[in-house]
Image (tube, rainbow, N blue to C red; front, top):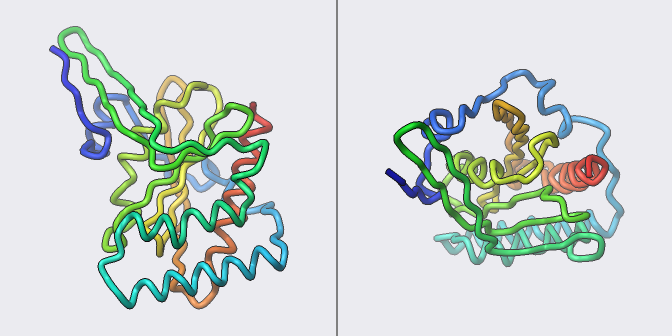
Length: 213
């Protein structure tokens, strides 16, 4: 029997059962977000300050939904990181599909990516926009389902989930037994503009992935 599950409806428990996915609590597993990050230029910092101001202005008129978040936060963030320029390849709404089988059943997980950033034809970043009232962690199972579609099981892949005001980074290493870890949660509402940290981590992870390629 073949069962189809939409990625947005799958749970972490189902991923653990179907694909033997394991969470790693050791901070050394996902060390890449914690150090050796690139510096930002002054114009990048100025743009990030404007993005933060725009988001705070949107908060005055709820509800804050996915499309306004993309327009006010995600798209300007990618522009500031120059991810629209060569050698990056930005694609939206890419269909993904993964499957798991045993002796009696077959399960297929399907879904679409909100944003996919590629470099040198390597999948290095998945960005999911969620409604602001939900924590980014609400999208963790969905983004992991997408990342399990990564074509090279020997290389790590990275993701980022955002609801516009908070950001969470994810690392997945497929291998024989898929393992994942997460970063701290970064919030625009903090006194310090955490978008500085978010952009630095994005640039660093993409650089690492291009070296792996």
